[in-house]
Length: 249
Length: 339
Image (cartoon, rainbow over all chains, first blue to last red; front, side):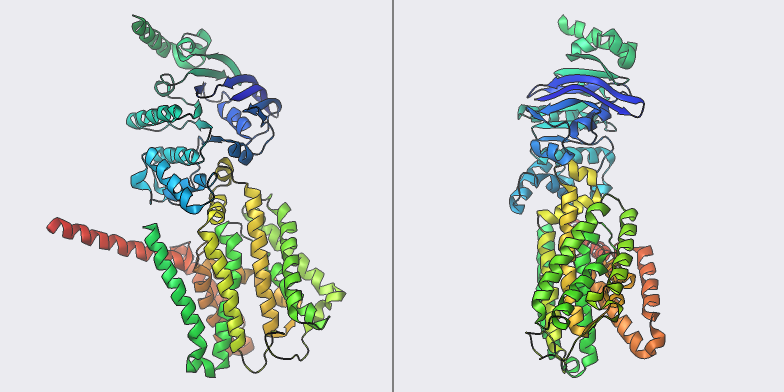
């Protein structure tokens, strides 16, 4: 569905992404992980048109989106959320989601119905009349998800949508993502919380220093020495290996 | 809850329009042409500021260039009558179209700038147009255009002995411009304007072409502002560049809206209701000496209100309403507990 082909992005002499390639298959959940500064967000920006890659190609459903502006990428059905929340602070939660709903539904009444649904799916119903800027950061992240969801996307790209959430909230979000995947939405997720990504991802892409160092199923990735060294750390690697052995028994 | 609020706002709007229609029938107003003058200016300035509010308030792009569009509209009507000796209407239409084109042409490069830098760029544009019109021979340069004696009536849109038709002209302008903004506010375009104001990146991320939205808002805003300019010249029988194309006029657009409440529907009307009587009555009491006293008072008011509530008077009203609602809810809940 999404093909990233040898994408490089340079800021002056700094190489943020170096010839990164991977595919996201339709209906799957792909995790994009790596230490801070690995180039995950840059890659996201290249995919969604916020940046123009220095070289390489990105295509979505067979359409070349490398040089499209962000709003055109969104109209094609690849919608993102931001790592640093970008709520429309002065507007209510409902209006925030409505902005997303208007992408597919020009009629105000129908857009409102769609908005109600999305708010309910994302457990925001109680807060619908609150000012978005007043919400706690975790809820603002969920609001971002709701707004992206209201655009009726084919591919949802979440940039650390679970950072700063409590473990209950993480669980809620994980369940939400799973149920949305079952409805046919494809996911590309940047995430630091391994407990959240590992159980749901079909495939994990690991970046380090702007280079892709691994691309495999979560079970295989946690045993990859380079990944353990670069990111997971010995402790987590062992824990996961133990877990998978137990599961094997 | 939103629906209830809307119904309330609808009701208020219809009542307001009805009152405005009936104002000239009040005997004290009917007998006093100065009072009529004040009412006409209130409606005109409210309409101007509402036109500015589309781009400056809802879309958040503070433009100090609106006197240019206002002036082009004024010159459109003026040229039709003074230079070509025909009715003003074709001039008004052509003027407003030119204003729209100019607005798009100058804001296209300016929108590459963000926030304050955009505002500064529009400052410069007013000066450029002011100088240009001052030396443009075809437009009579600094002399300006003086209306000859014309046949009174709606055809020429001039009256000499009465101001009542001007009042209704201003009211029509007011209802049209406020009506358009009310329609926009409740539909997709209005929400998109707000989204662009709040966060351009988010807007783009959900498929909004923010550059197009800003340009469209600017075009509509300039189009409506130019009609106000045309009304202004028909009312004054004369136009010269400093009268319509100056930073002073541009500031009025902005200040009236800021005082009333930026990005709110009734804000421009409230702002005009305060500034215009202040301006006209100080002018009457102090004569030439008093020119500027109104702005001193007005500036002081703006500082006072901004310190308390950056959303202007409408912000204060909303704060008060929220406070009352909360109180009422508390009373209801305590009553429920007692029962």
